[in-house]
Length: 188
Image 1 (tube, rainbow, N blue to C red):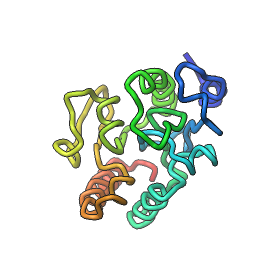
Image 2: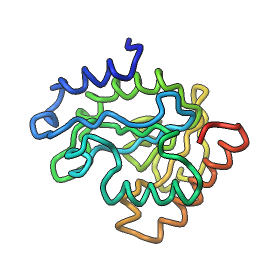
Image 3: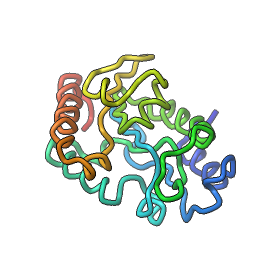
Image 4: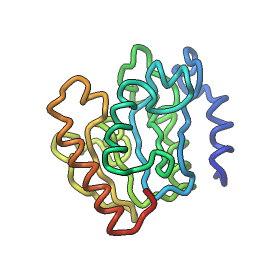
């Protein structure tokens, strides 16, 4: 078990548990407040994230940032991570064995950060964190309580780039997160 995020990050940088490590430029560990009340979990890094070593810096990240700013949620006060820490080829969905290779890193991040709310961005995050029985279309926008954490599934920002009609639901879901954070007096 790790005591600091930097310890996990050091192990991730050397990881070769799956084939994703062979083509990476950088690992994309996570970024934000290590004591965040709210954590966002996405699928995996894209080309921009692989180049910069930081999650959600490409087009989808910029869209997410606009929503966060619009809602008054500070990116610096939340924590953002992904299911996998290396970019899948051609931005494909991570394979189950690739996700499984990284999940212990993510679990340790969650144990250190101790978020009270986790926003699951997209189907890959939802299924890998809460289980295969969940689907993003049927569960987005609904709170799910497990092991003392409130989960809010919503669309991945990349899905909004492909289908702009999802932006309204994405915004409403993040409004629910903001309202819950305000009620609970969480850092945002």
